[in-house]
Image (cartoon, rainbow, N blue to C red; front, side, top):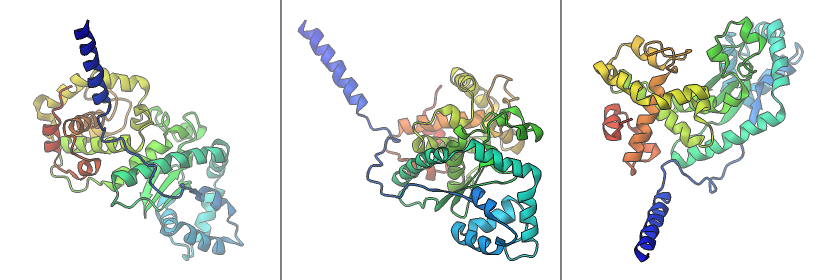
Length: 342
């Protein structure tokens, strides 16, 4: 009887110690001091423009939004000119008075309440706090701005500004999306539930740009995006994977159930080291499914597998921090040391 009690006690001790193991993404943000994020509403401010006040208001906007306002009018809505250009007034009012955009502004006002924006602000505030813990030497965005882009951009990260195009999150059944013939696999994620994950992922991609890879092959892209999604796991620990990857629950379950088979597909014939951009795009681009594998295989499967490899790497290399992971450019090293075996 005593031996049974001792054995049971040993199990409890082992389980307790295992439960106390530190996970690399578990951080305490209670000591991070920062003002709660306040989202600036450029989409609302634009509606204040009139022929009489456009000059003074535009100067106010330049001060309020800094260089982002210039980037907005020259690139995002593509007016091609600055505030002091002769074409600015005409092009801006043409944009604001366009029949479709006028309705889009109304749809945004109807879809997004002040409470919706407050909830998004709260989630972004916590994500930024966690970023400060993981990456104490890196700068964080100076401002978060909502705008209208003419249905061109979901999220942009420029001039230390994360911009969110609200008309791209009106809900999958919005009539504009049907009129513009956006594919169903895309409109399915064009709702307010996906805003935070889209914004954080876009931020991470820009923050850890893959412009200087060691080798421009599929493995490099797989690991790069794997690191991006793993970083998103760290910044958004309570957000479901289906939101972070833009998958349905069924697609996510398909990935989990077929992980071994999907990995086997890439290992076969050295596909991991294929540097043909068409091949890379085939496994990292959005779509209804991954055509090269099967109609049941979710899109961007290389990204999901990349995240799995990176998770395994971090589990087998407990001394590696998230900051060190993101600065590691050797994809082959990460794969080798991950001991990844689905």
